[in-house]
Length: 283
Image 1 (spheres, rainbow, N blue to C red):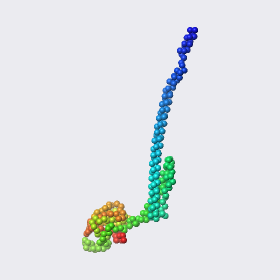
Image 2: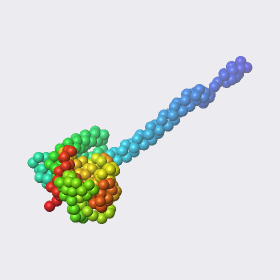
Image 3: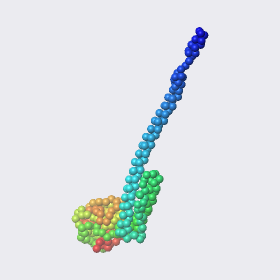
């Protein structure tokens, strides 16, 4: 009996409860569980960051697409204005047969800009239409230049807007200083000091300086070999290289240089040859 009790006591001494084994197992798995949990948290954080970046990128792209859409709308309006301008110029100058202008295709701007492929397609079509308009307006400019260059540069204005009295004509006359016969190469218009002097045609100022005989002098090159000269000026309002329009004020009347009184000496030259300016005065 004592032997049996001792055996039972020994078995009881080495018995390990089930919950103890479970606890031991959990403790053994805890590092692995913590590792996978940390990895899961890291993946969750990466996912949140990627989602945020994707949202930001999507928002940025939407803003860009919106700006592109606005710019395309502006291009549509500009192309429409160019179309109207081209039609008006063709009508005003009778160029309908000589210059067919491309029309603005509204279908170009009817495609919803929601994808980059649609954006690329629309931009390509707009670029093609813009190029067509550029070529058409270059041709129009060339036609207008060829058709109206003579009108733009034709010398037929009056150098004194108030049409002052002409007191000396073109040709042979008595020189007021030497009292000898001398060829007068232009027209003299008397007037008041600082009376405005105007260009008689469009052109480019080729000379603006003081001359011993002509005093303050301005010359305008009108192309095709034509030049006009304005002399004895009190002041010059233009400089060399400046483009001037017909009727634009270029100087003020004076008596500088070899002059007996306040007046304008006006010449028209073809090359180096003086022409009678009276031929070019408006009738």
